[in-house]
Each structure stands twice: as structure tokens, then as C-alpha cells.
Image (cartoon, rainbow, N blue to C red; front, side, top):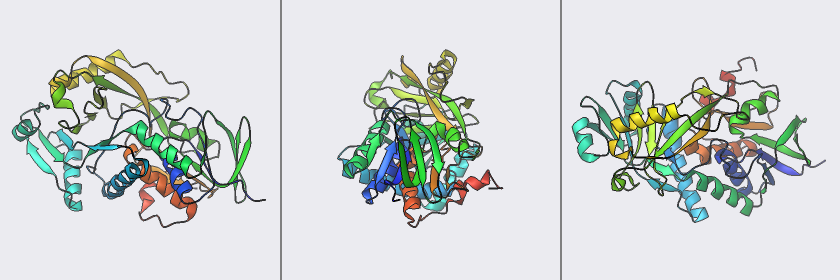
Length: 378
């Protein structure tokens, strides 16, 4: 019996919508299933902004960032929408901070230009920031923000234009691997395809466990705070870079995008959660912690709190992604565990997953992302 679809994609966040788009563009018969509405706020892909940058400690991410930037520009052209806005990136901390030094070495090795600024130089160039006298900053001018929700919607729209069938509010009840195909059961119907891509974000642990693959995927409850800046002109995307504070506890933030406020959060607050039962109300103690940090390092940004939100990460123990095929069912391919830094690579990850379905050359050594690092007996 021939399959109704060449590929089914489960999960229509940034990775899944990209996979559906690239598969449909390649002429595949694609069905994409999303358990909630498109661009819902219960996972990890929604909102006004995400950082995209070359500034990484591991060279593979720097290598992938080149193509990620190019793919987002191509998506802008294909969709006719402005999705990526260059702001520059401002990484700062004490000079001995290991991740700051490693980022500097990685950028030097890749030949990517940047500026290494002492506190006085940083204050002249970027008066929004108030660094201690012994701090330094790394400024990389290519960094930008991505309009997150708009990116997801653009990919989904283009997937549909190229012939993909998108079903929202359609949770998957069961997945049945066959010899060379897969069946996907929903409340209404049973679908069959030659290949299955799973991009379920914080629900990936549950999806894979049902397929007898248990990986250390930990959903975490994270929070972000939006401030009305006291000096609005300094914090527009034209004047304020995206920023990361390198310390044992990382803080990060973005400028005032479309009047939403200056966005500040703790990277990897690491509060384990169940995505189906997570507390969605932000914590006052967390908001105060972020306000105190913002008052110290971006005092003119720390006005009234406009909004605070809860969002979700899906962490791996080493904070590297998992991009692989199921060890027992090679027709099932998945991306998981993006650990709070995957959105910028979403278009590229979707294309890589599509290439795995199509049997195309991958172009990267993805052994860093292999599931077998956690399931050596697989």
C-alpha cells in the first residue's frame, strides 16, 4: 500500500515549521500536526524576539550560524517580511569569565571580526550599559534579533503555499512504527507516511518515551521580564545591541522591539517542570531579581515592568542539541533538547531534518548532537 504522505511533521514551532517548509518546497507530500494553535504561547517558539549571533564557545555553532543567517535572509525574501534586524551583540563580564574568553578564542579562530572593549571604552560606545571598572565587553556587529512569532508564521505559510497540509489543535495520541513507514493516530484519524519528523519541543521526552527511547530531556520553567525604559531613545534596536552577561549565572536581553519593552531574563533558570502542568504565572521574586540586575547594569532601562512571562526550555545535560534518527526506527527523525539557544538555528535545523528525510548530504559533522551520547547501548 502506498503511503498517503511522504512525511509527517509533529510540532509546528520554529523547527517543525521549517522542516515542513523545506520538505514541501522539495516536492514532498507533507502533513504537519500541531497540538495547539499555530504560534501558541505554551512552548518555546513564540514572542517578539530571539537573539541570533556568531558569539559562541563551540566552533560548530559558529559554523552553523553562517548558514542560519543566510537562511533567515532567504526566508525574508521568500515571505516578503522583515524577520531579522541587526543590532550588534554586546557580551560582557569580568575578563576571566571562561565563556567570554572561549567566545573570544572561537571568533578569532573563525576569522569573525569583533571588538574587545575595556569598561571605559564600552561606556563611551554604549552608554546604556554600566560596567564595573574591571569588566570588559566583546562587541560583534553582525548579531541581530529575529521576530520569533513572525518567523514561525512565515515558515508555516510558505509550507502551506508549497502544498503542505497543516492541522492545528490536533494532538497526537499514538505513533506506530511499521517496517518501512509510520502511522500517526489522532483523535479523529490515522495517518501514514514513509518518514516521521518529531519536533515537539518540551513534549519531546514524552513522545520519545512512548517509542521506547528515553533521553535526558528536561523541560524547565523560565521567565522573562519586559521593562519600560526610562530613556527610550537609547534602547531602540537602532541604538541598543542584544546583550549577554557572562558569569556563573547568565543574564541576557534585547532592546525595546516594537514598544514591547526591554527584555531581560536569566538564561537557564533551570526550574524543572512538566509542560502540561507548569505554573504560567511569573514569580514576583524572580521579577525583583531581574529588576535588581537591570538597575545595576542597564539603569536607564529599569523603568516600570510592562510585562513578565513564563516560557519553556528543554535542557540536555550538556546543553547541546539532539538531532538524530531513532536507533530502532530509522524512519523516525527528531530534533530535541535545544536548551534555550536553538531558535536562531531553527530554519537550519528544519532543513537538516528535511535533508535527513530526503537522504541529502548534511554538510556538517553532527556527532555532537547524536542521541547515542546518552543511549550508548542503543
